[in-house]
Image (cartoon, rainbow, N blue to C red; front, side, top):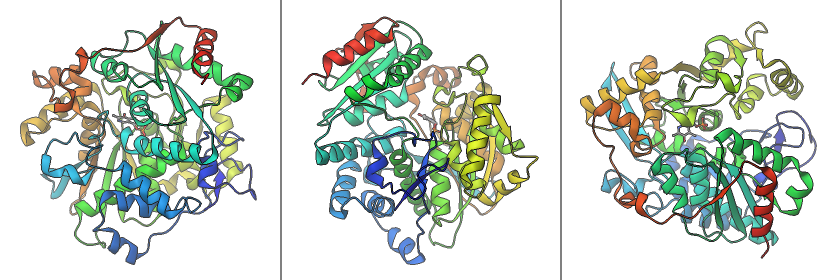
Length: 483
Ligand SMILES: *Cc1c(COP(=O)(O)O)cnc(C)c1O
């Protein structure tokens, strides 16, 4: 398997899975994709139906990482996808399935279900990929005798998923910046209660954007970055995307009896990482009818899939919503889909994303490329605060199931795209406890709390408060990377 950049650099060079695992962007600023999507044969699809999650993950990842010895990969997937790691299930008997499918009911002649992706340690779907990444990083670093210091900024989900994936891992330290006293009590406790010596929570006196600016400033100091072996785990990481392909197959098998049936997926979307994995599953040959992109008020993606115009937002135009993990101004993985949409023409991709930087967007309507979006199965919709409150209430009253705000955006938009006879699967991206305020508003009751999280807010917390100053963060990192 050879990887290429969406902007065309390194054509003719070889990049294996291990080569791109620890990096971010390609050196031309593009994103990595496989030179060709591996195809799944009818025989494979039939055989995979019965596999447990870990072995299905092995079969799929194997097709993208033929430079990793098979026995090592099998060991890594079996160690990652266990009922112990994904233990926060609401129905005990589902624990072994890792991503159980829960049918809400039949609406407009079609089964509407949730694929539970939030049973991992931080109760959000990011654990699905991040837990594997933790094990892959540790394995690869050990092989090359290297170490890595991960620097990131978070306002919630990504940072905690990264910390829980990397805690206790050999050769890895995590320095995670978060805005001091700006996260919910639950999210703060989730991160700051970690006592592992390789995890450093840095509370910055500032807002989330300040944290992000510090990470950018540190990353732009190339000498410091190289000397301190600084890396990231952001959503463009290829291994994260490919790990997410697995649950589209798992969800398909759970919703169908035979491999000639088709299903649709609705994906609560922000940076386009999750639904990009669905696109890849479809390109591999999984019988997916529609990929429904659901956004909140930050509707960059919905606007594109309705009009063909991609227009990134300024930070002043980016809303803080009650589904905060989808509050984005641009969708960092979107370039991967645009590459395929344009028939994999790197020159045009380069031009379009230059236009994004210089003019704030591009328009594929007038060029005629937009018509091809249908061939790829994409449709979209958006949801507002009122929609999500109404949907949380409706699903609870009708089906006695409590859903989180992001999943509610998914259910709201899924209902606008039901087709008789084609099962609709909404990806459940988080558990309600993470966004308790909106649950109380919608249901006038407390969100459900998985047993393992009782008393979380009372645990001792370990964090360092630093001023909004990149140099102080650099000093802190340097002082804690001496072994
Ligand atoms: C990250 C996240 C999303 C958005 O996923 P993308 O891959 O960025 O599109 C949706 N819901 C939750 C709960 C998340 O944490």
